[in-house]
Length: 270
Image 1 (cartoon, helix red, strand yellow):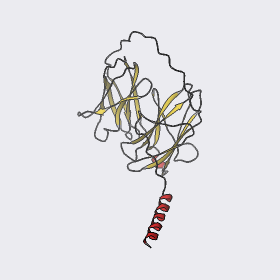
Image 2 (cartoon, helix red, strand yellow; image 1 turned 135 degrees about the horizontal axis):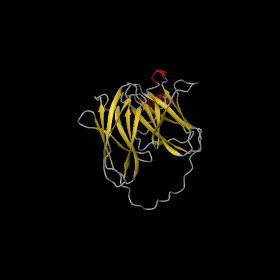
Image 3 (cartoon, helix red, strand yellow; image 1 turned 30 degrees about the horizontal axis):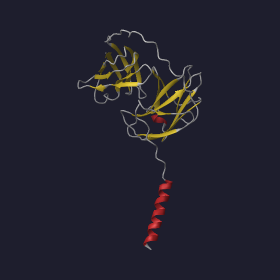
Image 4 (tube, one colour; image 1 turned 90 degrees about the horizontal axis):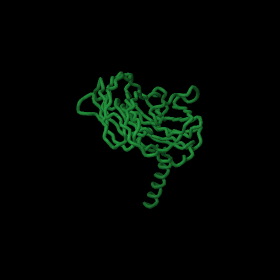
């Protein structure tokens, strides 16, 4: 009799497990190691809410040729009132190229981004959730493009004398009005590729614990890869990022502001 009761309980457990909704997968939270999003292959994931933002990163190999890439993300639960807090940004080799928007027709909870260009490039997609505590599941898919063909092997450039570039740069200042989808300013700095360390420092005003994670700076290599992220210093209002590389060229410093409408002044030097 007891064996029969155990069998019934096991069957009930299997039924309950089989009827439970699928749990969305956690995706890459590392912009240096994004998950590759292939054409027409949907990816699902989940993001908890966080006022300072929680993120997932994907990459798309755009083939060029003026093909129209369409990126679509569908969050659940669907709530158009938080459309600006649950969406995604797109970055190219030279920095930000756009943010998702709500299509003119169809499901108002969908976020969409369209892109065309003549040259191939790897694009970085940053899915974000800035709600207070709303955990979302989402599906994201790239369509409209063919898979990028592998390029020819690169021919190493002829050896030449290293170009002498300035070791420090004059301060650059500006103001960014924050946006929940991110507001940005970029500065290009030259780097000789000799392995030397370069420290980029930003002075931010105003600054407080709320702004500490929402306002800062990133540094990108000439081919668009994140090489350094700023850390807060003990002195309020300071952000500092240090990098070194054996690749010479123009490096991009991106100052960001993810607050909701808060203007922040900055001065960047290196």
